[in-house]
Length: 409
Length: 105
Image 1 (tube, each protein chain N blue to C red):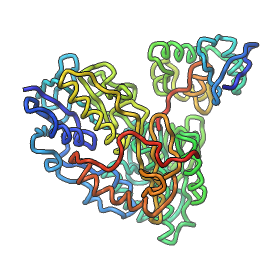
Image 2: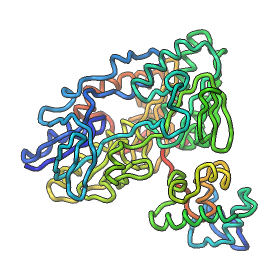
Image 3: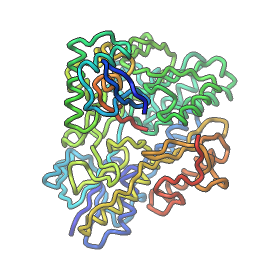
């Protein structure tokens, strides 16, 4: 019996496991290691702070999300000994493997910035990247009676690079509906030199921020927070005072990555951009937020990557060479408030462009444009996630990015 | 591709001002690029960073990111911002004649 071992049962790990459960020959066993008893739908974390989603409804028990052929080991990973093809778990158990998929994701590390954690954390300094954080923030927003709300991205990369913008757009809607928008100053402090990392999208999103009265402090590299003074300070001594700080802290890969000597300075694993093989090990594949790739850390990216990983695992299992199948494709909805959303579709080589998706003219989604249909698309996605994506059923979206339907800026 | 003149030599640069051919770089060109971006002269600390960046890039195949520079060069974050104001990762790479560090989307 040969073993495929998958570390992490988040979006990426679960998709790969379920897809391969239907494809790997019977002489292979599939084992997934993840300590969390439930699967979290991360996109809903954006909605929880605004009362648009109930925090009690964003998790589902894990076992039913994994096909019955898959063995789920409910434990944490201590380290990977890639040279010996084995993994050591936190409880001491050892698993040898023939092929390894690392899908251990990324996590926020507020401890990396002086002053984030401590007595003010989840009181006047918040995050919405954890269920706990988003829930606490919902309470703080409800009780907020005016002042300056600052959203700060500490450094890149982060999961879902558009989420901080979505948060600000939704905050604009939230306070408007409460009849207190004039009492709130919304500020976006970002290390980027524009609203987004790519110029065409940056222009569109920048205009939206301006139209909604959201101030942007760009090239802001946060060094520390003084929670008593309620002051955010950059490395070049710029200061932003706040009444409520929503921090998107430094992101790093899982701790076992460092313990295993596998990752870079942020514990992201060097990965081949197109085959998704680990740079240094030919029997290890990496996908999702755990890689060091410049593609976005997003569920759609994990989905497109999963198809390539599934193909390449089958090839490696059959003694064939892997294909360079992944093109960096990413497809993201951006909630822009008041029942509308934008959609962006891009890859390693092509930045987000205007147009329609997936079909020219017909769409039905519009690229880089606020529409209600896009918003319904984002909400409808919840169903697609649990019922199509996660179980490994086909999605009506091409794997590689297509120029069909796109226009020059 | 645009062309710029540094220390009497004509070199091809990208739209963002990075050398397209890293082998054309030399210390005089570095000083000239630095002056062009508002760093009047390069001190020993500047050179410590520049040297690290060039050596690391040669080994790793890409210009080091800011976190890597601060962890491995021995020059801390705060000081990097003083030496290479605003975007030290990008600025140090530019002065060091390296390509723009790959950013994420």
